[in-house]
Length: 185
Image 1 (cartoon, rainbow, N blue to C red):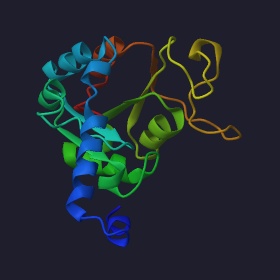
Image 2: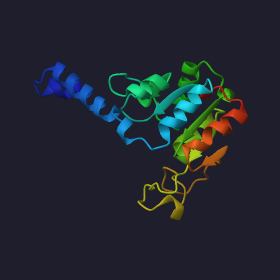
Image 3: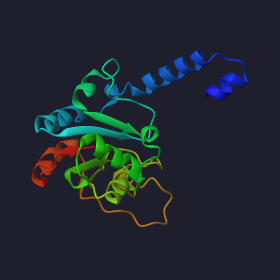
Image 4: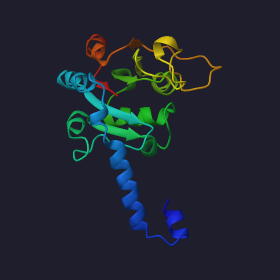
């Protein structure tokens, strides 16, 4: 964007303000969380887990001024921009392992996309939990209970099998306790 600004004679500081405003708006997620999200994250934190976020998006949920409750819960975040690659590439997952100071075998990744979340995690030796909410829509706009898994692709490839499939985040703390996991992404 900076190049476009220079090319059109716009000041670079104006571009930076627009980018900051965009990231701030994208990061204001607390009002949009599922009902079970904060209680589950708080339960995981009470279990002594390191909690982190891996995102392909342009948001930062670790900013106290934007997402105060999430900023208290999450220990770290990595984005595709930080890692230099998007999920399902290994880079974001390995960067998260480094930030968590954990071996991949000590981590579980929770996500709603078979290809990006489950496949990416498994590619690094990280256990995966596929969140498959019956009331959520897939990319095709039909309900997941009536449609194939949210694969994030257009078909034609085999899909990874998650370590666990849950329909609610509330199912996760007990599973993680049984596995002896020390960090969740």
